[in-house]
Image (cartoon, rainbow, N blue to C red; front, side, top):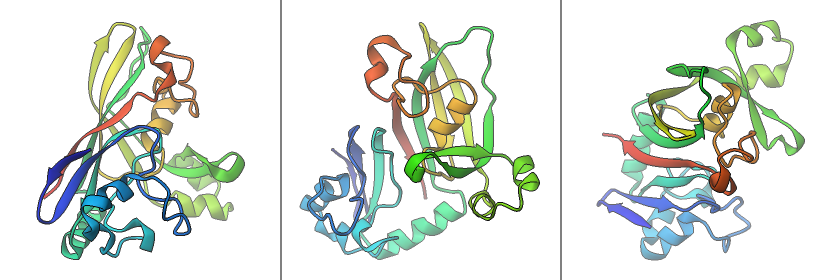
Length: 217
C-alpha cells in the first residue's frame, strides 16, 4: 500500500473500490485509504486539509479507480502543494484501457467545464465554452463551468482489441477522464457509469483506470 515515504509526504497505492478519504466526518470508522495510512502515520490526520476529516490528502481518486495518492505529513508541504495544484504544476498520469475502434481516432486533448448530472448529481457531463455562452441564464451551469479542465492523451498503444492510453492531468475534476473519454466515444472498459461496462470481455467487471505516476516539485 505504501509506495514512497518522505519526511514531508507519503505516496500510497489505492485499490479499486475503496474511498480515498471518508465521505463524511460522521463516519470516522469507514474504511478509506487515508484511514489505513493514518494507522501507521497518524500525523497525516493533523494536517488541516480541505475538510477536517480529509487530513493531508492532496487529491482523490474515484471509488473504482486504483493507483497513486499523495498525502502530506506536514502543514508546510500541504500548503505548498495546494499552491502547486492551483498553478497546474502537480501533474498526474494515468493508464486507461478503452475499446479499439478501427477507423476512429482520438484527439491529443479535450477541454471542457463540467456540470452535475442525473439522479443525486452523482455523475458529470462536459460543458464546452460555446454551450456556456449560449446558456448564461442557467446559474448553476454558469457557476460549474467557469474553469476549463483538460485531459491530455499522451500516448496510445494497441493491445489486441483494446487501446491502452496514457493520460495526463494538470488539474482534475470529479470523473474527468471517464467523462471525457466517454464523450469522445471511447468509454473506459469496465466503466458501468459512463458506458464502458459491456466492453472488454473478461476485463469488463473492473474499471480499467489506474493512476500510475505523480510529478511535483
